[in-house]
Amino acid sequence: MSSIISLSGIHKYYGDYHALRGIDLEIKQGEFFSLLGPSGCGKTTLLRVIAGFEDVSEGVLLLDGANMARVPANKRPTNMVFQSYAIFPHLTVGQNVAFGLRKKGLSKADMAAAADEALTMVGLAGYGSRAAHALSGGQRQRVALARALVLKPKVLLLDEPLSALDKKMREQMQSELRRLQRQVGITFILVTHDQEEALIMSDRIAVMFEGEIAQMASPQELYRRPATRRVGEFIGVMNFLEAKQTGTTEKAVSFDVEGLGNAEISVDQLPEGARATADVVGLRPEALSILFEGQNPTGRVADATVQDLAYYGDMTYYEVTLEGSSTPVTISMKNLISRPVLERGTKTRVQWDERSLVIFAA
Amino acid sequence: MNWLRLYAIVYLVFLYLPVLLLPVFSFNDATVIAFPLNGFTTKWFVELAGIDALHGALKNSLFIGLSSATLSTLLGICAARASTRYRFPFKAPIMGTIMLPLVLPEIIVAVSLLVVLMQLGFSLTSWTVIMGHTLICTPFAIAILSSSFQGLDQSLEEAAVDLGETRWGAFSKIILPLVTPGIVASFLIAFTISMDEFIIAFFLTGADPTLPVYIWSQLRFPKRLPSVMALGTLLILASLVLLSIAEYFRRRGIRRTGAKDSGGFL
Ligand SMILES: Nc1ncnc2c1ncn2[C@@H]1O[C@H](COP(=O)(O)OP(=O)(O)OP(=O)(O)O)[C@@H](O)[C@H]1O
Ligand SMILES: [Mg+2]
Image (cartoon, rainbow over all chains, first blue to last red; front, side):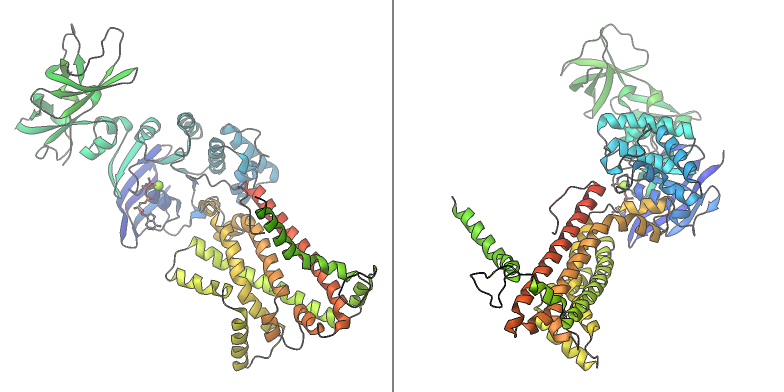
């Protein structure tokens, strides 16, 4: 598959401030791509560069193979859903959706038909003649989507489109956006600072920190193999244990891990450059499990003490310390009818697997 | 507890009684402005129709009012947009300087304008009055328009560009309609200010006086007083109509954009 968007060496300065520091990015046709990162890392800036609202200081941007350097925003095959939705308040819903169509030389009837179709697609059939300012937040969001999608852009840019909605509405829109994207087959680029949202919705995610892409991968890859400690921390919950490298063979590297003891990590589990420098390993909460009474271990075992717990109904999150270590470690356990919820101070055993240890690049 | 109410009533009487007396005396059948009233007549209004100098002054005032309202509203649009949308060096001092005529004593403005215009060798015409009125109306226009522009979501314009409009198209199709109520209000207020402005007009007017200058000149003739009253009555009526129109536009604008009504300028 070909790249619909290709960025290479993109730099952006605001005066002295270096907002984008060399972004390289290839996004495939039809992908649902997310830009994920903390506030101020440059996500919006990158999106606005693609849309043409910001000039780049350096670097090349290709959209469907065409260089966008001299193409103004209104001539680019991209459309944007703004964070504030930017619905034109003095127009009707139908006029809002048809706004971009007026330049396409369609007949009045074709325009109305296209607008109706787009409104139906986002679940607002029959809303065409409503005043746009009288809509709820979720409805505005849908109008903004319809207004952009009706132009059949090559790329749809969404800047935190769900952040203004309440939790329930947000979850509903997440699955709806996903469905819509599959249906129309348009490449979506979503900006979000919500890692869960990015994981749920995306085919691929770029994690950004301070104007740079720290890692670009599928949700699974990102969660299971975060490239740096910071990415691991940013996405989900991750435990970090000190580790010392004790030996290397052709196939594996051995580490002495705080509280867990010796661990042999196969080389294909290592990121490049991790060999010499790893002094910490990561473990997801579900990569450890508590051995309840009468359970037989199927992996490596370590002794631990329950320090604290948080009961979530379906899950319990235990905070334990491993024997010989004082680092708190979070373990998530599914609550089953056959399982007790352990109390604070209980001595127990935990089970773990070498394959789920994460070694970070330097 | 009723002191406040009493105060309010006295205040309103003081404010509006003279204005209410105007129409009363304009229909009174006597040349002296005094009670008791003498009987109903419309002859003062009829007399107005026969004074050619008055018609000239009215036309002149209308021309000056429309011109300075147009100019100051146009300048106001530019300044209000610049100050709400862009960041530029020395913004605060620049805006301050533009707003200054709002608080400068008018007589100072008038005298200095007169001196400068004389030095530059301009002759005094309606255009010199228009210049002066534009100068004092522009701050009002900016004040009204800034609040219209400020209330706009910045991304509206970008959204229009994103949907294929040029920058000018986005401005004219999205921003202008949304600030139209502000523009109408600014125009009407500037027009009203210019229509009844006296000092600058008095200093800068050439051979053709404006309406206030003409009225002032007529006050020397006691015989003319009742017709001046009639004229005043008509002017009050006209102002009421203008303000109602302005208010109508303001409300319509608010309804169209779905914003909350926060009182408004009028
Ligand atoms: N027009 C501008 N002028 C100067 N600095 C800017 C401008 N726009 C953005 N910045 C700066 O660039 C950095 C990146 O901004 P950007 O809006 O891209 O962040 P973001 O990742 O979208 O953050 P958020 O999640 O808060 O929206 C910020 O530090 C911001 O202050
Ligand atoms: Mg942002």
